Amino acid sequence: MYGICGYVNNGQPVAPVLREMLSIMEKHRLDSKESCGMATVQEGKIAFMKNVGSVDSVFPLGGDWSQILLGSVG
Image (cartoon, rainbow, N blue to C red):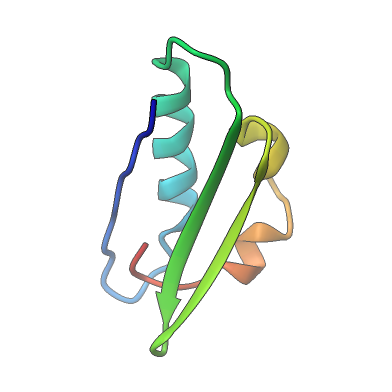
């Protein structure tokens, strides 16, 4: 099962909100947590991160992802 979400914020990074959305979707999935990822757009460039594992393992709180995914559209 796939879940896709999006968020636009006026100039502020959206990655923390996207992480929370992914976490909520993960809790409602009936099958295993196989992988997750997110992408943001900043200054016309796409930055993305994805990997195998749960949201907590791919995007740990306080992890480097919050310094890489700085876009305000995701």
